[in-house]
Amino acid sequence: MTFELLLAEIAVLQGNRSEARRAVRTAVEMAEPAGWVRTFVDEGEVIASLLTEAYAQGPELETPADRFAVRLVSLMRSGPQIESDEEDDDDFGLTGRLANREVDILMMVSGGLRNREIGDRLGLTEGTVKWYMQQIYDKLGVRRRPQAVLRARQLGILP
Image (cartoon, rainbow, N blue to C red; front, side, top):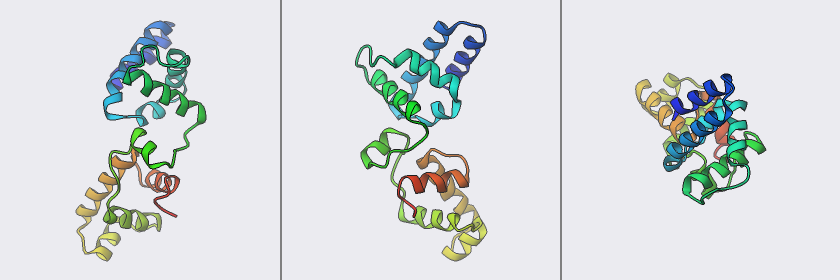
């Protein structure tokens, strides 16, 4: 999927927007089964404009991939805000609910604690806390601690 988005950006640089839209459509078809949204959002304005061009008029064939793309376009138009309705969260990148332990760890992260400090408070090794952090990142669709805290706040998981 990332490769297709890269091909789309190359096609834009070469002045071939038609080829770029085809590559974006292929990436959408690959992302739809898992509901991957973050990759498209992270790619920025070029991919957002190609998505809008390719799908702004609505689903062409009413396939799941076309409906997914229309949701992506809607998300791109409204900016990086995150819906807080639980049923929409699954559609936009959450792969599962956070376990109580994960929420506890995220609360401590939001308080500025490091992995070792969190582990000491919860009776876990630093490595176990790192593992939990990776689970949290995956579920929230982020890559860094500040992003995880921000996303959890946007979703109402943290105050």
